[in-house]
Image 1 (cartoon, protein in one colour):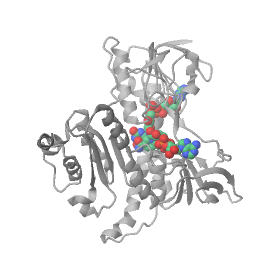
Image 2 (cartoon, protein in one colour):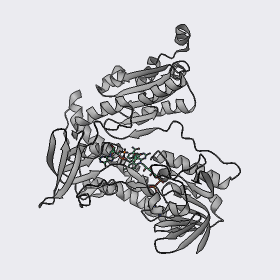
Image 3 (tube, protein in one colour):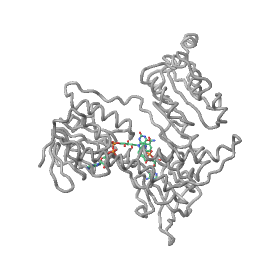
Length: 475
Ligand SMILES: Cc1cc2nc3c(=O)[nH]c(=O)nc-3n(C[C@H](O)[C@H](O)[C@H](O)COP(=O)(O)OP(=O)(O)OC[C@H]3O[C@@H](n4cnc5c(N)ncnc54)[C@H](O)[C@@H]3O)c2cc1C
Ligand SMILES: NC(=O)c1ccc[n+]([C@@H]2O[C@H](COP(=O)([O-])OP(=O)(O)OC[C@H]3O[C@@H](n4cnc5c(N)ncnc54)[C@H](O)[C@@H]3O)[C@@H](O)[C@H]2O)c1
């Protein structure tokens, strides 16, 4: 049995909790997977490194609309893959080496671990660890639906699909969320024939309704989108491809593909940690229950010295949320008498597909309910990229900014953008919400560069009609 001042389970966002203040104390970092966690190795970073070249590939066919004829000569999949992972793998290995060899006070356990009591852990090889403080940053993993043939080697999740040897000719994607939308674009832009089977009637259903509807339409123009369709079974063909039996509105059909990507959500890793043995509370979706200080709860009360952060305890499976929670835990571990709460107000997110999507705050349906409950006068504006000068330059026909606000205060309740660089256009709106800037002041209290695409945000803010003078006139 080895005792530590601090034990951290998970080397993704958990890794950043070790600050110089821990230099004179004993710390254990425990990770049974690849050092650096999901975002670095199989998540945000490699996916975006595939999305960017996919955007370059897609430009070839889109430029013709503007009178520029270019042709995609080819995509060197292995070269792209090896460039991406050449960079990422060395960051992971360097981080691991630093923790393992260069920090004398830190011990790295490269194995999985489970709880045997609130402050007691056992590693897969049987080592016993106790610690005064434990930070649980064990993340989440992909869910595989129960379909016959799901264990075939041609079936991938985001954990493995980016490392395949060849660009698959025919891909079937299951699911209609973030990962499906991003990989649907990457594979189709690279030239694979993509079919996407979605069990409901639209993609990205957690997004604002206009976004979901218009993205679904845009996606159907890029790949074979089968809505209201389920996969019944997967059977290997003699030539190594896979026959998927689909069931959709037109009945049953067979589809032969070379690769299947399952993107049907992720579950927190609480089961593998055996959190039940420690008596920790779980939310209905199996993530750890925590309070605003990121303290893990047991029977509704914080367990002294036990913290959680990121996907294992968050309703937002997003890296910037995990990072903020890691900063909160870092502070709270060192300042027990001055605990800070993690703020989850206005959490933005982006889907790096084509078109790109970015959003923050309430969807229209949520905003209507909120306004009704709080007696607010809800106003909404939808501003097309194509209504601004830069949108003309792009001949844009899909991009838009949708804003929802309270008419009286001008306070933004939600912002949703679909189109070119949506994630960048959204950020000033996140800032306005975080710092309580009303829509009219944001629009008229500063210069907007002409004729930048940001004018679409300026115009959307003005279209809300929250000018205080207008409001006074209407009152
Ligand atoms: C394909 C994909 C793309 C994504 N893109 C984005 C994006 O663009 N933007 C964004 O904000 N978010 C994105 N995300 C989400 C983001 O990656 C996660 O929210 C984030 O990485 C979670 O970090 P974490 O520290 O909570 O967990 P992780 O980084 O997953 O770290 C958990 C670690 O714990 C280890 N572990 C688990 N159980 C145990 C155990 N019992 N014992 C020991 N070790 C254990 C694991 O091996 C892992 O290394 C993406 C996710 C995926 C899958
Ligand atoms: N750009 C980003 O920030 C980014 C990118 C990728 C992933 N992520 C994070 O990772 C999480 C996981 O991504 P994801 O795309 O797997 O999940 P998701 O929750 O975004 O989408 C899951 C999809 O699978 C469908 N589904 C669920 N169970 C199914 C079943 N049994 N059969 C058929 N369809 C089923 C759902 O209806 C939904 O369309 C996301 O929620 C997100 O938080 C973020």
